[in-house]
Structure formats: C-alpha cells, structure tokens
Length: 169
Image (cartoon, rainbow, N blue to C red; front, side, top):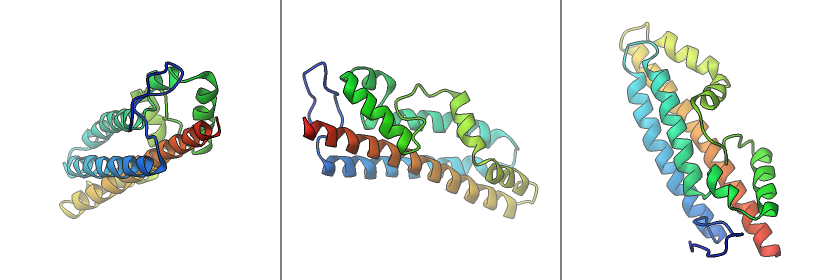
C-alpha cells in the first residue's frame, strides 16, 4: 500500500485487489477480537451494561475499519470529486451506511435497531442464571460479529470500486 502524493488521489488505501483482501482479513480479525470482548460484556448479569458497551465499541470499531480502508469522512473528502461520487455510490450499493460518515452513537443505535429482536433475546436470556448469561454472550458475539463483517464487506466493496475506477483512468 503506497501513499499517493497527489491531493486529488486518496491516501493509505489498498492499491491492488490483493491489498483489499489483506485488509479485509485484518479487519475481520479485528471484528472477531472486539466481538469476543462484547460477548464477555454480555455475560455480565446486569441488564443494559452490554448494550451501552456494544454501542460505544461498535462506533469505535467502525471508525477503525473505515480508517484502515482509507474511507473515513476526512479521507473521502480529500478525494477527487468523481472518486467521491463513486465511493458514496458504492457504499450505498453495498449497504454501507457507515462508510465515510462520522460515526455517532445515534447512528450506531439506528443500526442496532435492525437487530433489536436478537438484542431483546439477549437481555431476556440474562434472567435465567448461568445458562442465560452464556446465551446472552453467544448472541452478543454473533450479532456484533455479523454487523462488523457487514461493514468490512461494504468497505472492501467501496475500495474495489475505487480501484476499478482508478484503473479506468
């Protein structure tokens, strides 16, 4: 991955499809690590603690993944306008509503609402001692990992689209 000097080009993003795949795997490993931590927090038998932690951790995770792929709001703002359009169109096409956007707890909460049923089951499971905590941890891990993987895939798709556009020039 080479840092490009021109102001109209992006910086610190993958330069080849192989780089995109390497970053995808690195980001997926990061997601798994954070999902494991989220699962540990879900096992704490105090309702609500894990959800607050999940929101904060997921917001930070999305920022880290965006930065890894060179797709933070600031990095995209430095793109040539035609590349910016490609990045946002690719993000929307991939369902990546958090690609290239400032990540707020409000945005993460909106995303978490998509998986509200699983979160409700996770909270309800905490009522049953031990088995409920294990179930809550498993659900927490699965939901966090799935959402993280979806974001990684959206970022990878945007990076691939940008590479394809760059190759056409």
